[in-house]
Length: 370
Image 1 (cartoon, rainbow, N blue to C red):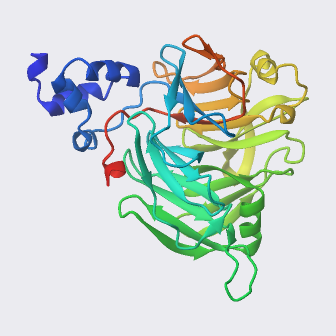
Image 2 (cartoon, rainbow, N blue to C red):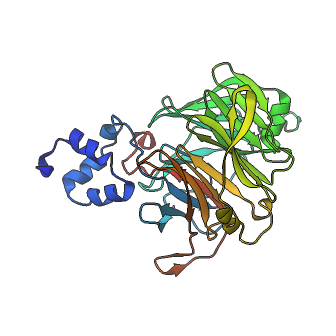
């Protein structure tokens, strides 16, 4: 019976599997392998996220052309080569099981996307305006399509003698039409802050794309997609936090931050642009992540999030604190994940990483095949 199931029914069954179970199912027979790789068929199915996301670690410096992936189902680390990518890259964010990245061989922003599990890669078209160090934001429209927003940055020096300047415009990439569109301008003050003090981590919540400044005192800048308006929000304990990051949980904008005195907390933005504490990082996990260091800022604390999970981390070998939604009861729970010290008996050197959370997508992507 199983070998004669129609592909649409079989793909529906496959959509409930975790990525490691689907990989084993693909190797069962030619029919199952063909079905699992049918991207057109998978695009018609909802993405059923019923398993914890994988943590993907990419070196921030030259430590080999690899990524390190943690499978939460069996608590194991895997090494995936990136030898199918032509040039050195820097990761930016996860999108629908894919990785958005920028090329590291040029200062001007050139974006690309890959799937490290299917080894597919694609350059995005060049931006309308050549920019250096702009802020990048992501909006997932559905399980397949997405938009990439680029704001601010430094423009190129003019050929007639003018110097480089801050670029007070915003443009958006549409994955459906594979083009960039310039959609508006911004106050010059925002352009400067997005260029100098803003990392590429963005949060989309209730029609607004948010970034947080990377220098104390922290502030939050938001772009209202529909109205094309810019706005600014204050941050709780803005001048005291030793680290701060924005995260979305349950449709709300949240902020993770910590000090040596109070530990790490999670705030939720409520009505009237007021912040309230909704959760605290367990003291023993926070101390374990600090590793004897007194301050959160001294260990370069980083945070990455995805719908249903928030992760605090340091580097490849130091372990992670994860706050995630339990699929069985809908409650949020704290977990500790050991860092990656060895893979298949091979001892690894510890080094700084950029972390991403994603749900691996093992079907061939139509978007990356264009």
